[in-house]
Length: 217
Image (tube, rainbow, N blue to C red; front, side, top):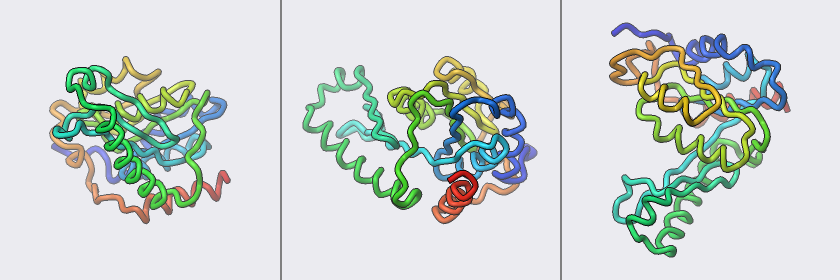
């Protein structure tokens, strides 16, 4: 398998070229999923002349079966629950709230670490471009999409450099538009499509957000 992208910045520039039609959208906002999605999103935001921010999601694991998501919480106070899982598991309301509180504290900690004291951006009525560095199963992306819908996003455009083709097709039913630069089959792992897939650090995320804020305060 030959890499398609040199690094996340290269991937972001190539993704931005596919999203140029959004530059005239009113109230455009570009959100990157941490951490690897932020450097990709930074290139998209710069090309579109749009504000950039980070969008954090915490899955809510079912008590006793944490690998099974009963919902998610996200930046901006969004909370979405999987009613089917809750009914089938017969988990108590107190147990649910305990998980929500625990994950809420971790979400707040990560928000402060990456965004500092700046509040989460308002998304109601806005066109949101949701970006990551790649998608395999899409579970985190689906949670983010549900959370943005709950917050009243006007339009959601999903943008990724590389994704599993089946996942890309499935996500088309959940957002207004999906833009995937490459959909190799088989996907294998996201990392194989990058020459440099070094883990993005918190400092790099903070720096990207600070640079973007300086351009669009």
